[in-house]
Image (cartoon, rainbow, N blue to C red; front, side, top):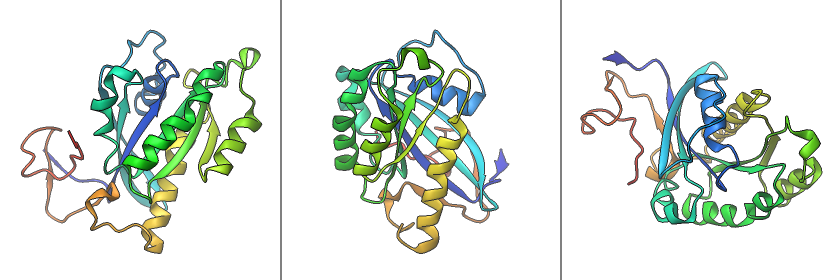
Length: 214
């Protein structure tokens, strides 16, 4: 067991259609690896990484949700209490972009009004197969008050920036007081003194960094 080496925990969710590369984005961010043949997520997957924002170490607790409709009832429970949401589509498949509005509606309904949402156009390395323009993604984001980036889970281009930009926005909300840390649905936990971190899922009465809403 080790003491906390971070000041905050931010809960993230990654959402979007099946096959857009959500798990690949997560693995690139948490493991710096691209695995082309990852099986489709069943329910949810989980990953963490500690980053630094304005001199503060922040642990990101990231839930990668399945894109298939049959898992929607399960994955929706993980939307609750999310401080950040990454909404992913595939720039080479227009249908995945067309479905973004539905995913956004779910997110806005199931998360709190202060949740920071970033729209990601994944697979930017496949420029020759592009089916959705950068301008279309940016316009949708601007019209809906979202952050926006294109990235490549394969090359790692802009993957870190996506997670860090959301964290910066969340931290800014903490600093200006618009995010209430005492609210359970904020998706943020602040370091408590003299606490120890146990392996995830063990002794939930003692550890304080589990956001599981299942």
